[in-house]
Image (cartoon, rainbow over all chains, first blue to last red):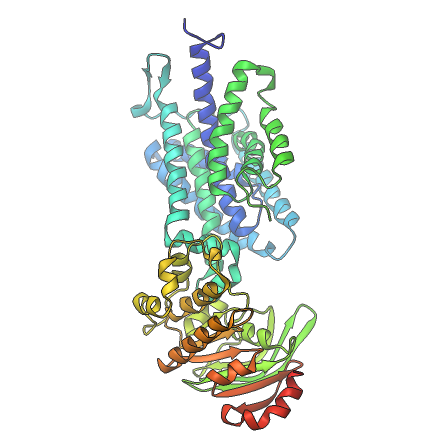
Length: 295
Length: 230
């Protein structure tokens, strides 16, 4: 058996893949959080619940309506995005003039309510969601077996992150979004309907979370806690990458997933804490985060 | 074109404007003169809907705008070049230039803007805030010329700039007046204001206290010195 640093190669590559998959979810979730934070100045603690909701919507579509995975990948983000519009219009928009803490409390409360309702309805044991037929099986890469679905998750997440980055950095819509993040009143004085833009930004962030949720459904069981399990690490990712930085959240998301995976090989006891150790070190050296601009 | 009557404005508890009255006619360049804190910038922001609370009447081309959101005021045809210039650091020069929405036909096209401000073309892909102060001011003026807005609010466009740049801004204002734009200008420097404006309103303590046609500026110097404390 091939060995790397005295460890069996399949173990290394297996953990590397696992790290990349976790990293893909970290990246997608922290990307949405970063966009929402940049525009709304709200730390969206409901993000994990929206992720979970995406998985549940996909599951519900399959079991009640017979809508398959591919359609769910498109429709669940739209449904959850629409839910995001309602949340923003009805509740979150009332907080913009108040201290950050209120946004945190509101979204945290929303997360508890959404997750609680899901637990009440479906229990907490979780429900299986089958891998779509086209992505079942595995390929032998020579040095390891790659389950096709897991490879697909990494690629799909990377493409979605790249697409989001392109929209924000290279289009006129993105330029307006960046400008509004800097100085919203002036952008509004230039004829842009900023309140509507803020609503759609929240909806977009929610849709990204739901997209991640659908991707996650066949890997983890669809259960009410699946978002809560991720969200704490995702917040660490956002802090390490730099609050509000798009590139930061993507790079840091994938990077930390890999670091976490490698820690499982070299020092398994530390795998649950390594991200927070990185966070402490980064915050000591660069309080604004790796990609953040110091205020 | 613009009719302001009994305009009051507040920032939180502080009452800044106490019944401002003035008019701007189509095609005019009109200045607001006054000491620091007289309420000139607050007047500009109130016209644009950018103060938290305002009362009174602001009629623009017959339309009451006092209760409108800033984006709807912009769409009615008013554009602002703010005192702090408001160049966006995360946008390059072209993105800054293209940011304000086109609200009506009749704005300047890019070719004309680049003829007026050749520096902006050379630096099209630079980060907005990497430009010199003068270039940033040019950019702040240029981007509102594109929109088709007919009333331009220029808040201290010459502040802190070298004399040669001030002259260039003077030429620009005369050029846009010649093209039929209407300009409301806030100025500290009335020597500069005299070279571009048709009329001057003097503000004190949140009110308009006097109006001086440009032709009478020379004969009103004593009065003006008293108002401005220079």
